[in-house]
Length: 306
Image (cartoon, rainbow, N blue to C red; front, side, top):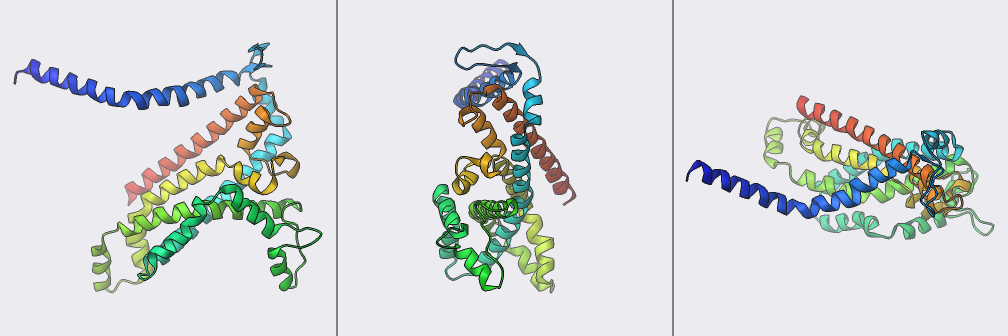
């Protein structure tokens, strides 16, 4: 084949590749890139009215207002507490459970199914169960409080009581919701480790802790970093979790999240402020992007050292 023929085949192959990518690119542009640009523009339009599509100025006032809004600051605090506590705890617990599941032969599939059930259960239904378990009413203190009182301690209203109690319930709920997916991923990662490494280590008389830290952990570290990154992103986007337990008026409960604040600015009782909502959404996007990049850099450096 001549050089011109090879060139034509190459161009044809490139065009075919772009043709296959066209639907996905169109989807990304129209449903992700364009809305992001649109929200970025809205965030600088002061006094934007969605009905008349008008605004009275351009500047950074929307960001200034949002960053001084006590409801937004409370939402940021709640969101960061969720991220800091739920991501590492859920990942570690999922890893321990995955290791336990990987070490058994009988009824392994049954236990995997049981642990995965919360992931396919309706979020609001699970939240209702948590509310029943933790809520203190004039008629009952709830199952959790009955257990607490059995140890000689006083009952606590975890749903309408002190802030620490409400945040504790929310963290437990989020951990419960996200763990099944992490268990499934880590179980699959453990199953993919070549058993030859374990046989060689046992022949050399290597202890189980050393096998875990020298073989298992490095082999599944890419999956762990993947779960950490997606866990951070998911925790920053938490909203329905809080609604499932504390209802739709999260500001009154002091349990709103950053996504909840954006929703309230658009549709809630304080709704009708798309410019403020856009500014809050951009701030959330910047935080998530920054943390994701940091995690990717750490993950890359760790894998290179390994």
